[in-house]
Image: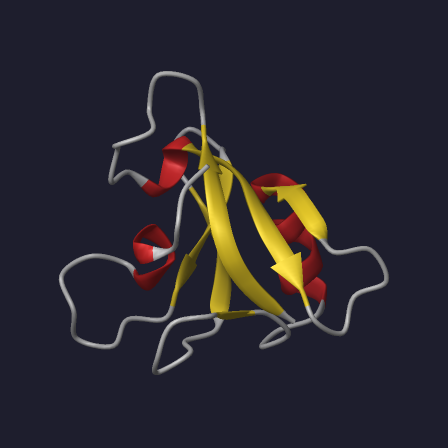
Length: 92
């Protein structure tokens, strides 16, 4: 599966904070392509590591994270760029 675009929370469209991603569009090897909340994706990749990659070269995999306040979110494996590849996806 691949993450192809993101949707930020209302009023946060230009944010570069991973915690402000509301949902992520998934496609490929999935029965129903569409937006899925980051918490659902977190739980899925926790049980299925390396199953979702960001659709930007070098196609880093998503990993589950939990904030210090217990909020579930996801990020991509670091590949030496400043901004997470997930935040470089198109936004709606």
